[in-house]
Image (cartoon, rainbow, N blue to C red; front, side):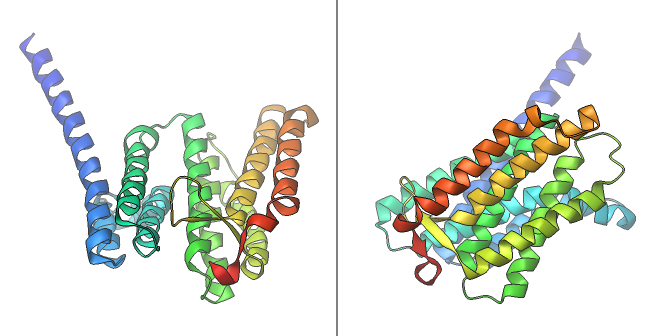
Length: 269
């Protein structure tokens, strides 16, 4: 009985420490960005929090870095989002509310979504990273070269595809399929670089949502459903992808035909 009590106490202490450290990380990043008005100290703290990725033999570093790319993308997106808010023309109260909402969302990622290893949660993790990764790139890259933007889009595409495919046991073509998806994504990204549309967020002031992030998320969802159908049936069944296909086409059509008139062009972002 004493042994069981010790195990329970250690488990409670471990959970409490895990929650406290993750909350402290999110809050610390928020205050660093807010008062330093710089992303670099926050980036340093974020990278420091990833020490376990390199706390193994060097031959495992590359594999661990690839596995942690999705989490790193979310962390960078959080920091850049806070920085964009910090430099937006909004009132101090609105700034506090928006940054607190951002921080609560990141805490939810750290505590509730990231720790899960079941396939449905892994797919959700990849989708969140794809959406916010692309949104972050196009919210700050309007003055960058096309090559750098395309490279970053490629990295987000590769990381999210690999994360998704890794949830399927013994996937023999994981790297090849990840590269194929990232190639499709950079083609979309290259077009979006020359024609970027963004929408104002109704709740969080000072943040613009790039249209391309919604489009890539829709294409990612459709691609996942097609691949999942192939894995289970050795072919892509129309009944498995019909609704996702209609949904994707409908969303893209509405965005392009109906919402371009209420959007903001790249020159104004």
